[in-house]
Image (tube, rainbow, N blue to C red; front, side, top):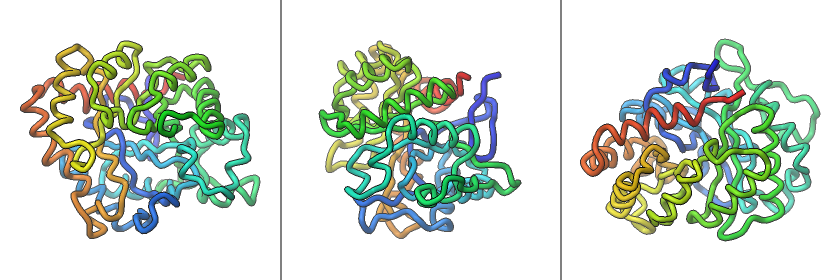
Length: 322
């Protein structure tokens, strides 16, 4: 039976509703000093604001070892009614310090961890995994294990390092074992075809992959070529005028929809900074996507196209295939 794995248990894909495909309620990284997301009350308030802005579900894209808090995700989901699909995996190399213990893990060990996160449950404390072989799993408010529903890897700018290749090999192995969807962080949408090639060689069909930050290179021709392979395009650069304005992203989306690839787009905010979360005292917050960008997108491409991006495509993509 088709199912989506959330932090509060498995649900039918039709129950997801409108999905923000990429956010972070908890994240701590050496790349983001001073921008840690580590306060349950504040992150819970931000999740409530996202819910009130029109979203029913979100993907929390923080992978292993970067401050994720599965039990807190489950509590926030239960309090707010916002369905949450959590991630396992390993981010691009730059997020892990030179002495980080995960740097010496091979693909087999990583894959075993990723599969356990999806099938058994995520550990209550990621850091404890390096010191103890059997860490208790995080528990939801009803006592059930909190399980991941998505695999994540990442690559650098026009580069797939040995570290990142190992991660992608482990992600592919875990995908073969679990049928979980795959998200790959791309730096400015570089090496997108190369990532799809690597994953395809390891048995991951491109239609099970979402390419995060595809819109950082607003090239409709490139995006259509990726969509023709079946890949999903993660658009999440809104409210970042220093890199791409909302107007550019609206034009990109309209062009891709016009060329027939609108059913491969998923939308998110990837705000991911304490200084950009309203509940932490920053701006514009997670509600920006629903309250300020989506009305403009509906004017540009129509309600039906936007509903595909928010409802139908995520439901298909986030379904476990095993």
